[in-house]
Image (cartoon, rainbow, N blue to C red; front, side, top):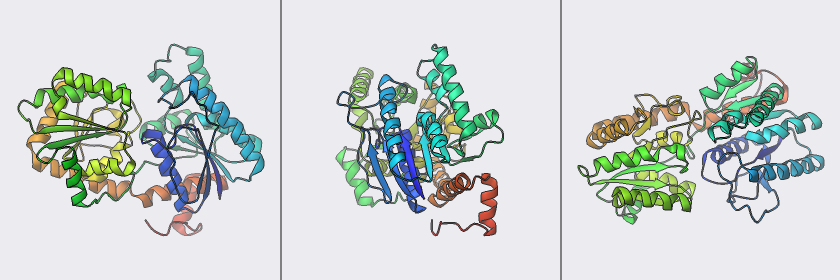
Length: 411
């Protein structure tokens, strides 16, 4: 099967949606599909079997693309649309697979070229407008709502990554052909050599420290105030505490370096900047505690899956973005307040047995629920449903009965 996938995000960057796109590509590759990924000019080059990356022309004054709506994205989406038309006119495809706002024009292209459209819904775009302070532009929000409903009504299959979006689209269209495909860890195997982990800790002077690690972007909703306030309260009693912040752009790192210095905890916080996927997983392996202090949002942070696979205890705020996946057996969940987060961090610092129990429980759940085999199986069902124009439930039942042969031969 030949797939045209349109991703209007920097690819590759180690952040939310690009990581999800990366996982979709690996899943389709494992199923034997040929994928042309059409994306913007910004991003690191990666190699994935059966995947060819096509980019829009370089716009010299656009060197990075921030999370959320922007004028730059409007221009880039126009370029993506033009190039998508050219590709569809010159090559035969079986499916169009779109991510986020690319669905608005992929819907149209699917109708014109007679192709099934698979919509990868990482978030509700009208909600995104409100979350990024565009809620006062009511006509724009209404336009996005109309477009979103049109996409959901016309797509062959909708993919979601969490229960919140699943409930949202089923409320709009109860009979929508839909499947929830939770993400998996960036790599399922996090069994790194112990010597590599020791060397990483030595590199940062962490041999005798209790290491707390955060990975991800540095946007305001990630709750760093909670985290650093907690560290400020605890380092007097626990000077061994060290926090490693993996990710962030240069200007964001400078801001938080100044903040941690102002708080007097600069000796307890290390900023690594953006690192490779493999290196980010090494930091998870080197951690004693993993944290996600996020205060806003509904979509499940992709870091959660790698956190669980790492087998380390996770301290997370008790918000819907986390509780869709996490529970009290696999994480320490606390209210998103400085007092609660500090108390939770203190509890993990002082209770090694609890750290071990939570870490083991989380890893067991991840291996059972979020394996690569389960991930690829759901992706296969979605594509068969799109091509055959059948409900996903019927496709799944046909695979179980052997009426449709599965392409999956191994986990």
